[in-house]
Length: 378
Image 1: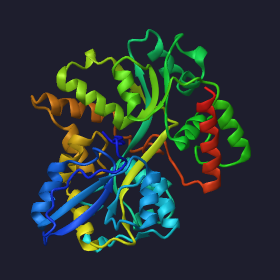
Image 2 (image 1 turned 45 degrees about the vertical axis):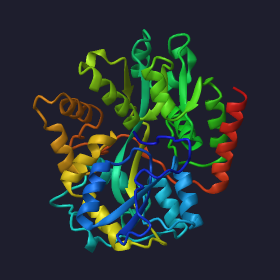
Image 3 (image 1 turned 30 degrees about the horizontal axis):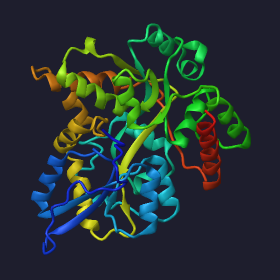
Protein backbone atom coordinates (compact mmCIF):
# COMPACT_ATOMS: atom_id res chain seq x y z
CA UNK A 1 0.00 0.00 0.00
CA UNK A 2 2.81 2.39 0.88
CA UNK A 3 5.54 3.38 -1.56
CA UNK A 4 3.26 3.09 -4.59
CA UNK A 5 4.97 4.51 -7.70
CA UNK A 6 2.90 6.45 -10.17
CA UNK A 7 3.67 7.48 -13.75
CA UNK A 8 4.20 11.01 -12.47
CA UNK A 9 6.32 11.41 -9.37
CA UNK A 10 3.83 13.75 -7.82
CA UNK A 11 0.09 13.57 -8.28
CA UNK A 12 -2.81 15.05 -6.41
CA UNK A 13 -5.16 12.45 -5.02
CA UNK A 14 -7.62 14.86 -3.48
CA UNK A 15 -8.14 17.69 -5.94
CA UNK A 16 -11.62 19.05 -6.41
CA UNK A 17 -11.15 22.55 -5.12
CA UNK A 18 -12.75 25.60 -6.68
CA UNK A 19 -10.45 28.50 -7.45
CA UNK A 20 -12.86 30.80 -5.69
CA UNK A 21 -13.16 28.65 -2.55
CA UNK A 22 -12.62 30.49 0.73
CA UNK A 23 -12.07 27.33 2.72
CA UNK A 24 -8.64 26.97 4.32
CA UNK A 25 -6.43 24.52 2.44
CA UNK A 26 -4.03 22.06 4.06
CA UNK A 27 -1.27 20.87 1.73
CA UNK A 28 0.31 17.49 2.56
CA UNK A 29 3.20 15.59 0.96
CA UNK A 30 2.71 11.85 1.51
CA UNK A 31 3.49 8.41 0.18
CA UNK A 32 1.04 6.78 -2.22
CA UNK A 33 -1.95 4.91 -0.76
CA UNK A 34 -0.79 5.81 2.74
CA UNK A 35 -3.94 7.35 4.18
CA UNK A 36 -7.65 6.56 4.40
CA UNK A 37 -9.41 9.10 2.18
CA UNK A 38 -12.64 8.64 4.15
CA UNK A 39 -10.93 9.79 7.36
CA UNK A 40 -9.54 12.78 5.46
CA UNK A 41 -13.08 13.66 4.37
CA UNK A 42 -14.24 13.51 7.99
CA UNK A 43 -11.47 15.94 8.91
CA UNK A 44 -12.48 18.29 6.08
CA UNK A 45 -16.08 18.26 7.25
CA UNK A 46 -15.21 18.86 10.90
CA UNK A 47 -12.85 21.76 10.23
CA UNK A 48 -14.49 23.18 7.08
CA UNK A 49 -11.29 22.94 5.07
CA UNK A 50 -9.84 21.24 2.01
CA UNK A 51 -6.96 18.77 2.20
CA UNK A 52 -4.71 18.47 -0.83
CA UNK A 53 -2.34 15.51 -0.88
CA UNK A 54 0.66 15.35 -3.20
CA UNK A 55 2.51 12.07 -3.64
CA UNK A 56 6.24 11.32 -3.64
CA UNK A 57 7.92 7.94 -4.04
CA UNK A 58 10.92 8.33 -1.72
CA UNK A 59 12.28 10.12 1.33
CA UNK A 60 14.86 11.74 -0.90
CA UNK A 61 12.11 13.35 -2.98
CA UNK A 62 10.44 14.54 0.21
CA UNK A 63 13.67 16.24 1.18
CA UNK A 64 14.21 17.83 -2.23
CA UNK A 65 10.68 19.25 -2.28
CA UNK A 66 10.91 20.69 1.23
CA UNK A 67 14.40 22.11 0.70
CA UNK A 68 13.46 23.79 -2.58
CA UNK A 69 10.56 25.56 -0.91
CA UNK A 70 8.75 25.87 -4.23
CA UNK A 71 5.59 24.53 -2.61
CA UNK A 72 4.83 25.44 1.00
CA UNK A 73 3.70 22.08 2.37
CA UNK A 74 1.98 22.12 5.74
CA UNK A 75 2.67 18.47 6.60
CA UNK A 76 5.11 15.83 5.35
CA UNK A 77 5.44 12.13 6.27
CA UNK A 78 9.17 11.23 6.17
CA UNK A 79 10.91 8.25 7.74
CA UNK A 80 13.17 8.44 10.78
CA UNK A 81 16.49 9.06 9.01
CA UNK A 82 14.98 11.76 6.81
CA UNK A 83 13.46 13.49 9.83
CA UNK A 84 17.00 13.66 11.21
CA UNK A 85 18.34 15.14 7.99
CA UNK A 86 15.54 17.70 7.80
CA UNK A 87 16.15 18.75 11.40
CA UNK A 88 19.91 19.01 10.85
CA UNK A 89 19.25 21.32 7.90
CA UNK A 90 16.76 23.49 9.79
CA UNK A 91 13.81 22.57 7.57
CA UNK A 92 11.30 21.68 10.30
CA UNK A 93 9.57 23.54 13.09
CA UNK A 94 8.91 22.10 16.51
CA UNK A 95 5.56 20.52 17.29
CA UNK A 96 3.38 22.45 19.75
CA UNK A 97 2.06 19.63 21.92
CA UNK A 98 -0.30 21.99 23.71
CA UNK A 99 -2.32 21.87 20.47
CA UNK A 100 -2.43 18.04 20.54
CA UNK A 101 -4.74 16.98 23.38
CA UNK A 102 -4.93 13.47 21.89
CA UNK A 103 -1.17 13.05 22.34
CA UNK A 104 -1.62 11.59 25.80
CA UNK A 105 1.06 9.05 26.85
CA UNK A 106 -0.99 7.99 29.88
CA UNK A 107 -4.49 7.56 28.43
CA UNK A 108 -3.58 7.12 24.76
CA UNK A 109 -0.14 5.44 24.90
CA UNK A 110 2.17 4.75 22.00
CA UNK A 111 2.98 1.12 21.27
CA UNK A 112 6.17 -0.32 22.82
CA UNK A 113 7.81 -0.66 19.41
CA UNK A 114 7.19 2.99 18.60
CA UNK A 115 8.70 4.13 21.88
CA UNK A 116 11.66 1.82 21.26
CA UNK A 117 12.29 3.28 17.81
CA UNK A 118 12.01 6.81 19.19
CA UNK A 119 14.61 6.01 21.83
CA UNK A 120 16.99 4.75 19.12
CA UNK A 121 16.58 7.82 16.89
CA UNK A 122 18.47 11.10 17.21
CA UNK A 123 18.11 12.96 20.49
CA UNK A 124 15.13 15.28 20.59
CA UNK A 125 13.28 13.73 17.65
CA UNK A 126 9.99 13.94 19.55
CA UNK A 127 10.15 17.74 19.35
CA UNK A 128 9.71 17.62 15.58
CA UNK A 129 7.88 14.39 14.68
CA UNK A 130 4.66 12.65 15.72
CA UNK A 131 4.49 8.90 14.89
CA UNK A 132 2.18 8.04 11.97
CA UNK A 133 2.94 4.39 11.04
CA UNK A 134 5.79 2.05 11.85
CA UNK A 135 7.01 -1.44 11.07
CA UNK A 136 9.84 -3.60 9.81
CA UNK A 137 11.38 -5.05 6.68
CA UNK A 138 11.47 -8.78 6.05
CA UNK A 139 12.25 -11.51 3.55
CA UNK A 140 9.10 -12.24 1.55
CA UNK A 141 9.17 -15.61 -0.18
CA UNK A 142 7.30 -17.95 -2.49
CA UNK A 143 5.96 -20.93 -0.53
CA UNK A 144 5.63 -22.98 -3.73
CA UNK A 145 9.41 -23.43 -4.00
CA UNK A 146 10.19 -26.69 -2.22
CA UNK A 147 12.78 -26.16 0.51
CA UNK A 148 12.87 -22.36 0.27
CA UNK A 149 10.87 -21.64 3.41
CA UNK A 150 13.03 -23.98 5.47
CA UNK A 151 16.21 -22.41 4.10
CA UNK A 152 15.08 -18.87 4.92
CA UNK A 153 13.91 -19.68 8.44
CA UNK A 154 17.09 -21.61 9.25
CA UNK A 155 19.62 -19.37 7.49
CA UNK A 156 18.05 -15.90 7.27
CA UNK A 157 20.35 -13.44 5.51
CA UNK A 158 22.65 -16.25 4.39
CA UNK A 159 19.76 -17.65 2.35
CA UNK A 160 19.23 -14.23 0.82
CA UNK A 161 22.83 -13.64 -0.27
CA UNK A 162 24.30 -17.14 -0.70
CA UNK A 163 22.99 -18.94 -3.76
CA UNK A 164 23.94 -22.39 -2.47
CA UNK A 165 21.72 -21.97 0.61
CA UNK A 166 18.48 -21.97 -1.39
CA UNK A 167 16.96 -24.24 -4.06
CA UNK A 168 18.59 -23.95 -7.46
CA UNK A 169 17.05 -21.30 -9.67
CA UNK A 170 15.60 -19.22 -6.82
CA UNK A 171 14.79 -15.75 -8.19
CA UNK A 172 15.80 -13.04 -5.72
CA UNK A 173 14.82 -9.35 -5.64
CA UNK A 174 16.45 -6.44 -3.81
CA UNK A 175 14.68 -3.26 -2.76
CA UNK A 176 15.77 -0.57 -5.20
CA UNK A 177 16.99 2.00 -2.69
CA UNK A 178 20.79 1.91 -2.22
CA UNK A 179 20.59 2.81 1.47
CA UNK A 180 18.38 -0.23 2.10
CA UNK A 181 20.66 -2.49 0.05
CA UNK A 182 23.63 -1.29 2.12
CA UNK A 183 21.70 -2.10 5.31
CA UNK A 184 20.94 -5.62 4.05
CA UNK A 185 24.64 -6.20 3.38
CA UNK A 186 25.47 -5.11 6.92
CA UNK A 187 22.84 -7.41 8.40
CA UNK A 188 24.40 -10.33 6.52
CA UNK A 189 27.59 -9.70 8.50
CA UNK A 190 25.72 -9.08 11.80
CA UNK A 191 26.71 -5.42 11.72
CA UNK A 192 24.77 -2.23 12.31
CA UNK A 193 23.31 -0.64 9.18
CA UNK A 194 24.47 2.74 10.46
CA UNK A 195 28.26 2.33 10.49
CA UNK A 196 30.33 4.29 7.98
CA UNK A 197 33.88 3.58 6.84
CA UNK A 198 35.84 2.77 3.69
CA UNK A 199 36.13 -0.78 4.97
CA UNK A 200 32.32 -1.06 5.19
CA UNK A 201 31.92 0.28 1.67
CA UNK A 202 34.24 -2.43 0.37
CA UNK A 203 32.38 -5.03 2.43
CA UNK A 204 29.00 -3.84 1.14
CA UNK A 205 30.16 -3.96 -2.48
CA UNK A 206 31.55 -7.45 -2.09
CA UNK A 207 28.40 -8.69 -0.37
CA UNK A 208 25.94 -7.16 -2.83
CA UNK A 209 27.98 -8.61 -5.71
CA UNK A 210 27.64 -12.14 -4.32
CA UNK A 211 24.07 -12.49 -5.53
CA UNK A 212 22.83 -11.90 -9.07
CA UNK A 213 19.53 -10.25 -8.27
CA UNK A 214 16.76 -11.07 -10.71
CA UNK A 215 15.14 -7.73 -9.99
CA UNK A 216 15.78 -4.41 -8.27
CA UNK A 217 12.33 -3.07 -7.49
CA UNK A 218 9.87 -1.58 -5.03
CA UNK A 219 6.20 -2.58 -5.25
CA UNK A 220 7.10 -4.87 -8.15
CA UNK A 221 8.80 -7.19 -5.66
CA UNK A 222 5.68 -8.09 -3.68
CA UNK A 223 3.67 -8.36 -6.87
CA UNK A 224 6.29 -10.61 -8.43
CA UNK A 225 6.21 -13.06 -5.56
CA UNK A 226 2.42 -13.07 -5.38
CA UNK A 227 2.21 -13.82 -9.12
CA UNK A 228 4.91 -16.52 -8.96
CA UNK A 229 7.38 -14.44 -11.02
CA UNK A 230 9.83 -14.00 -8.14
CA UNK A 231 10.75 -16.22 -5.20
CA UNK A 232 12.49 -14.17 -2.52
CA UNK A 233 12.77 -10.43 -1.86
CA UNK A 234 13.66 -7.83 0.77
CA UNK A 235 10.46 -5.81 1.30
CA UNK A 236 8.50 -3.72 3.77
CA UNK A 237 6.42 -5.97 6.00
CA UNK A 238 3.51 -3.65 5.23
CA UNK A 239 3.93 -4.31 1.50
CA UNK A 240 3.67 -8.02 2.22
CA UNK A 241 0.53 -7.42 4.28
CA UNK A 242 -0.96 -5.31 1.51
CA UNK A 243 -0.61 -8.27 -0.84
CA UNK A 244 -1.88 -10.68 1.80
CA UNK A 245 -5.04 -8.68 2.44
CA UNK A 246 -5.80 -8.51 -1.28
CA UNK A 247 -5.55 -12.30 -1.54
CA UNK A 248 -7.58 -12.89 1.62
CA UNK A 249 -10.37 -10.70 0.26
CA UNK A 250 -10.77 -13.28 -2.51
CA UNK A 251 -10.06 -16.42 -0.48
CA UNK A 252 -10.22 -16.16 3.32
CA UNK A 253 -8.41 -19.47 3.84
CA UNK A 254 -4.89 -18.52 4.95
CA UNK A 255 -3.67 -22.00 3.97
CA UNK A 256 -4.25 -21.14 0.32
CA UNK A 257 -1.87 -18.18 0.40
CA UNK A 258 1.23 -19.02 -1.67
CA UNK A 259 3.64 -16.57 -0.02
CA UNK A 260 4.83 -15.55 3.44
CA UNK A 261 7.42 -13.33 5.11
CA UNK A 262 10.24 -14.04 7.54
CA UNK A 263 11.28 -11.10 9.71
CA UNK A 264 14.83 -11.55 11.03
CA UNK A 265 15.88 -9.97 14.31
CA UNK A 266 18.49 -8.07 12.32
CA UNK A 267 16.49 -5.96 9.89
CA UNK A 268 15.34 -2.40 9.30
CA UNK A 269 12.84 -0.99 11.76
CA UNK A 270 11.20 2.17 10.48
CA UNK A 271 8.81 4.83 11.65
CA UNK A 272 7.15 7.42 9.44
CA UNK A 273 6.09 10.59 11.22
CA UNK A 274 4.02 13.70 10.66
CA UNK A 275 6.27 16.78 10.57
CA UNK A 276 5.64 20.47 9.89
CA UNK A 277 8.06 22.26 7.56
CA UNK A 278 9.44 25.67 8.51
CA UNK A 279 7.65 27.27 5.55
CA UNK A 280 4.22 25.80 6.37
CA UNK A 281 1.43 28.34 5.96
CA UNK A 282 -1.32 26.64 7.95
CA UNK A 283 0.44 25.58 11.13
CA UNK A 284 -2.60 25.58 13.40
CA UNK A 285 -4.61 23.49 10.92
CA UNK A 286 -1.64 21.12 10.57
CA UNK A 287 -1.74 20.54 14.32
CA UNK A 288 -5.48 19.90 14.14
CA UNK A 289 -4.84 17.29 11.46
CA UNK A 290 -2.19 15.54 13.56
CA UNK A 291 -4.46 15.60 16.59
CA UNK A 292 -7.37 14.21 14.53
CA UNK A 293 -5.30 11.20 13.44
CA UNK A 294 -4.12 10.63 17.02
CA UNK A 295 -7.70 9.89 18.04
CA UNK A 296 -7.79 6.08 18.47
CA UNK A 297 -10.98 5.63 16.43
CA UNK A 298 -9.49 7.57 13.52
CA UNK A 299 -6.14 5.80 13.81
CA UNK A 300 -8.01 2.49 13.64
CA UNK A 301 -9.91 3.50 10.50
CA UNK A 302 -6.75 4.88 8.91
CA UNK A 303 -4.82 1.67 9.53
CA UNK A 304 -7.64 -0.39 8.03
CA UNK A 305 -6.67 0.62 4.49
CA UNK A 306 -2.91 1.13 4.81
CA UNK A 307 -1.49 -2.21 5.98
CA UNK A 308 1.16 -0.82 8.31
CA UNK A 309 1.01 -0.85 12.08
CA UNK A 310 -0.78 1.89 13.98
CA UNK A 311 1.42 3.69 16.54
CA UNK A 312 -1.38 3.77 19.13
CA UNK A 313 -1.84 0.95 21.62
CA UNK A 314 -5.61 1.49 21.91
CA UNK A 315 -6.08 1.25 18.15
CA UNK A 316 -3.89 -1.87 18.04
CA UNK A 317 -5.92 -3.47 20.84
CA UNK A 318 -9.12 -2.76 18.91
CA UNK A 319 -7.72 -4.45 15.80
CA UNK A 320 -6.45 -7.64 17.44
CA UNK A 321 -9.40 -8.16 19.80
CA UNK A 322 -11.91 -8.77 17.01
CA UNK A 323 -13.68 -12.14 17.32
CA UNK A 324 -16.74 -11.68 15.12
CA UNK A 325 -17.77 -13.17 11.78
CA UNK A 326 -16.48 -10.48 9.41
CA UNK A 327 -13.81 -12.25 7.35
CA UNK A 328 -11.84 -9.10 6.60
CA UNK A 329 -11.68 -8.00 10.25
CA UNK A 330 -10.69 -11.51 11.31
CA UNK A 331 -7.92 -11.57 8.71
CA UNK A 332 -6.73 -8.13 9.81
CA UNK A 333 -6.62 -9.21 13.45
CA UNK A 334 -4.74 -12.40 12.56
CA UNK A 335 -2.16 -10.62 10.42
CA UNK A 336 -1.58 -7.84 12.96
CA UNK A 337 -1.04 -10.28 15.83
CA UNK A 338 1.19 -12.52 13.69
CA UNK A 339 3.45 -9.96 12.04
CA UNK A 340 3.33 -7.12 14.60
CA UNK A 341 3.23 -9.13 17.84
CA UNK A 342 3.43 -7.35 21.17
CA UNK A 343 6.76 -7.94 22.93
CA UNK A 344 7.02 -9.47 26.37
CA UNK A 345 7.35 -6.75 29.02
CA UNK A 346 10.60 -8.37 30.16
CA UNK A 347 12.23 -8.13 26.72
CA UNK A 348 15.18 -5.75 26.74
CA UNK A 349 14.41 -4.69 23.14
CA UNK A 350 10.72 -4.04 22.53
CA UNK A 351 10.82 -4.27 18.72
CA UNK A 352 12.67 -6.06 15.95
CA UNK A 353 15.23 -4.33 13.80
CA UNK A 354 17.34 -1.18 13.77
CA UNK A 355 16.15 2.29 12.69
CA UNK A 356 18.14 3.79 9.82
CA UNK A 357 20.29 6.81 10.70
CA UNK A 358 21.09 9.70 8.40
CA UNK A 359 24.36 9.38 6.43
CA UNK A 360 26.38 12.30 5.12
CA UNK A 361 25.99 13.13 1.43
CA UNK A 362 29.43 11.88 0.37
CA UNK A 363 28.92 8.49 1.95
CA UNK A 364 25.47 8.16 0.38
CA UNK A 365 27.00 9.01 -3.00
CA UNK A 366 29.54 6.22 -2.51
CA UNK A 367 26.73 3.75 -1.74
CA UNK A 368 24.75 4.90 -4.76
CA UNK A 369 27.77 4.42 -7.01
CA UNK A 370 28.37 0.91 -5.70
CA UNK A 371 24.75 -0.13 -6.27
CA UNK A 372 24.58 1.44 -9.72
CA UNK A 373 27.75 -0.34 -10.80
CA UNK A 374 26.42 -3.67 -9.53
CA UNK A 375 23.15 -3.21 -11.42
CA UNK A 376 25.00 -2.34 -14.63
CA UNK A 377 27.34 -5.32 -14.35
CA UNK A 378 24.80 -7.90 -13.24
